[in-house]
Structure formats: structure tokens, C-alpha cells
Length: 212
Image 1: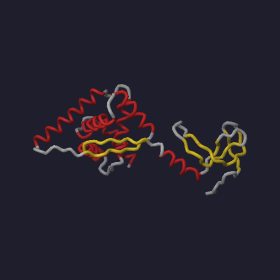
Image 2: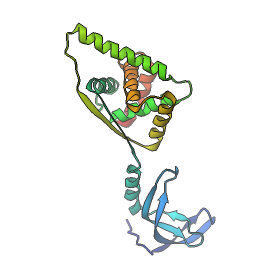
Image 3: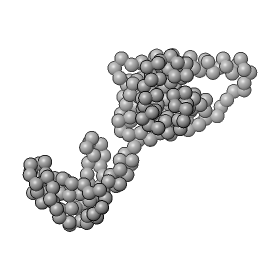
Image 4: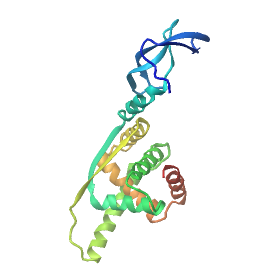
């Protein structure tokens, strides 16, 4: 691979000028094509006529990928440990070799699906969550189990598309982030572990195959 240096020159097709033009390699801030964020001061080929960026050498690719990673949004919450057990059990039922990284896939799917028009609203999610809480209380009583108070941290890093779906869902439901995550896990239990939604199960299995 040829290593380009600042000040090197070459030729490339400039879409703005609609012709092959001379270019000079320089350091520029390059915005991402989706309009969210940018890679700062990477080496690029700049059109000598209109100063448009027309070429990105391979050596700049790692810096762009790293800048993309830094655009990820952190989603964090402290949940009762049993909620994460339920989430992981659902993931295992969909893909036996699923790891904790698949938690992000499950939540991404539900953020997107629940944010769509016509999806379940807050009262429906709250009802499902109340049912799950009642189930846990009943099982503790029947099995004569002591009260469990252990909390565990859920931490995910998602891209801006997933973060926007979450933001829309939070606005639509008026729930706190922790309440929403707990309710979605209760919904995942109903859909997947209880087998109540074969369409969702099929969708998640397809996504899991692509992710693994």
C-alpha cells in the first residue's frame, strides 16, 4: 500500500467539477455521510479547483473507523439481576451460542419495533411488566425463596440510529429509561420465552444468524 503524505499530489474524478482534476493531499475534518459526527484531521485528497474532498487513502480508514466508534451512545441502567437472567435466557433460546454482546441486538430490535406507529404503547408495556413482577412474586412464594435484592449494571453502546429509536420510544411512553428497559425485558420474556410471538422469534433468529 502506498503511503501518502501531506502535500502529495495526484489526480481523481471530482463529482463537483465533473471532470478529472489535480488533487493535493491535506489534513481535513471529514463529516460522516449520514450527517452525524466527523473524523477530525485525517489525510484526504482535495480538489485543486473547488477544494472538495475527492479521495480518501486507505491509511485514513482506521482513523475514520475509530471516530465512528467514538460516536456511539452509552445506555446504562442498574436492574434487578433476574431481569438480565431473563434477557440472557431469551437470547440463548434464540441462539445457543449467544454472548452478552447480543443484548444490544435484542434491544435494538425492540427499540425500533416499539417506536413504529401502531406498536404497543406505555400502558401495554406496563401491563406486561406488572404481569412479570407478579409472576416473580408468585414463584418466590411457591418455592419459598428469600427476597432477592441483587442489582446488576446493564451497559450498551449503540450507534445514533438505535439511540434515536430509544429517544423516540422514551418520548412516546413517558417512561424513565430504567422503567422502559425493565418493561421491554418483560415483553421479551413474553414474546420469546413464553413463545407468544413467533414472528418476533423468527426475526431475532435471523438477526442472530447475521450477527454471529
